[in-house]
Length: 84
Ligand SMILES: [Zn+2]
Image 1: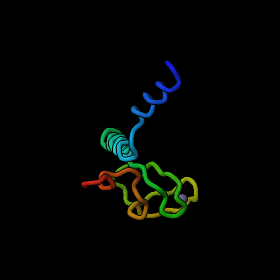
Image 2: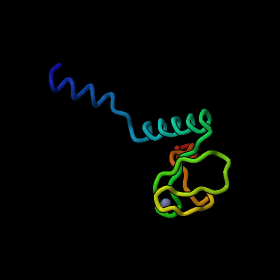
Image 3: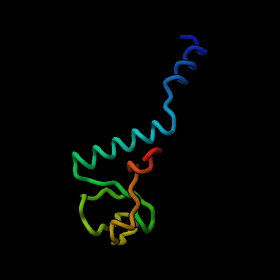
Image 4: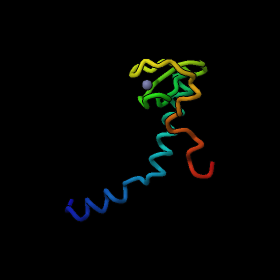
């Protein structure tokens, strides 16, 4: 395939930011439902924390702070999509 044609095909296949976020939301939702796990950012240092769903507290493996899960923002949740 010529370079110009390949570039055109790659551009056509490239997903938009909204499509990529939608995909992340879908993957995260699958992790939550099938594995009963949730992925959040630490409310203290911002590190990624994976925790079991429906727990009250979580301890960050990075800063070792224990906090309520409610202060740890979810990553890629449905409400962040447009129209929700
Ligand atoms: Zn932390």
